[in-house]
Image 1 (tube, rainbow, N blue to C red):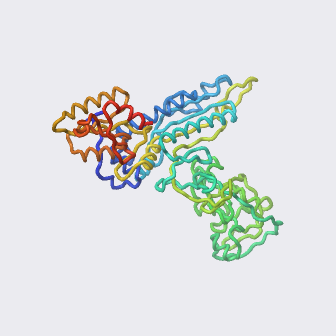
Image 2 (cartoon, one colour):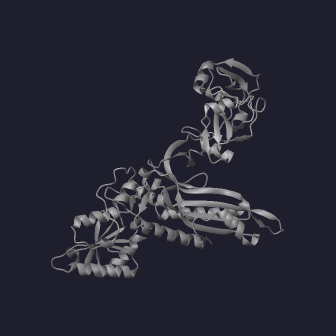
Image 3 (tube, rainbow, N blue to C red):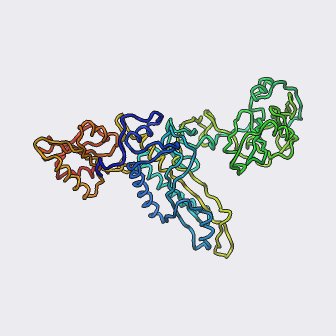
Length: 511
């Protein structure tokens, strides 16, 4: 590709709203442009990089028995229609799609509203079979991040995250054992309070103690001896009363998972009053016709202080099981910095990052069955992975750049070689550059040829911004020695390489 034919230009300055390094350098290198609707357009350079990643992933999937299907397929419907017998299983299918999510334009491709992705679905007769396939898929994903030189960290749920200060999503990480998960779903080492005999309920006056902190101070008790009440509305129809220990905050994401809900919002004061509770003094004791969910520590927390459903009053010695029960007991607590790691009990820390691979864990499909060896109907098991290619490209740019532009790994670069022609006075350098361009292309290299009649400094600046691994300069001084100047983008030094040795030199440095 000749540079004059390329549909993109480099920028001397980054867009004013570009906060991440990836946005800055991908825009300056001519890979992306912001669009009018707040999304991003991937220009030809980016599409070449993405297509290179797609080709690698397609090969890896096919070697594992994967079969490509069209985008936006509903996997459960496909399974229900095309899998009838145990002889039809297992199956691995994949599709290249564009996923949609909430847009955060200042995060560049990390926050694009639409992003190219690879969706992988495994269908099997049992959970055990899925586990074996999961090992193969994770090995492939680890290899992908290795060749793209992305420091991706596997999360506890089987996905992968790229940790970066500008990531936009809070993660919880253990500095000792490497435990990692989004804060919304992260676990923590939970310790129950010391066992106590259940004491009689006691109603006490607690004027103006309508917060956990105020209540604990008024009664001179630790916050973990109180019960925190949180009222939510699920799917705009179910009033939910969530109970946690007072020293914990609630994770809305965990609560939504426990409820199997897709929409959750805080209840209004009027909705709380209509349920027979009082905001600030709410209690599960005596409440009816409300879905009660308690954190899994509550059943092991005796003699807590909870609201009395009367303004200005609380109840001492509230005990789960004796005074109230719940329809759901689950982990709904938000994990925070300083909490104990669920695996090694080291204090956890919070970091920012972006999700590169999301997962849908192994589960039996509700509406897709197969006939087993005994002629009985059984549910088809499924597990899925979504690899965000747009974010992966952004992660490469975020990590691999210097003060002059991108430094792309060979697996990601749109072109292997950036060929630069410099005019000569005594030698027809243009003819030599044209011949070299054809020879390199015919040899199998991908080449971006800067044949412009421009200053050397401008050409080198553009080459640094675009970030191809190898820059070859055809100039008069080197040609007089039957050589060209070759500079690897990742290094400062230049080398004079004889014309006959160029291909071997490039191959060695692209490995």
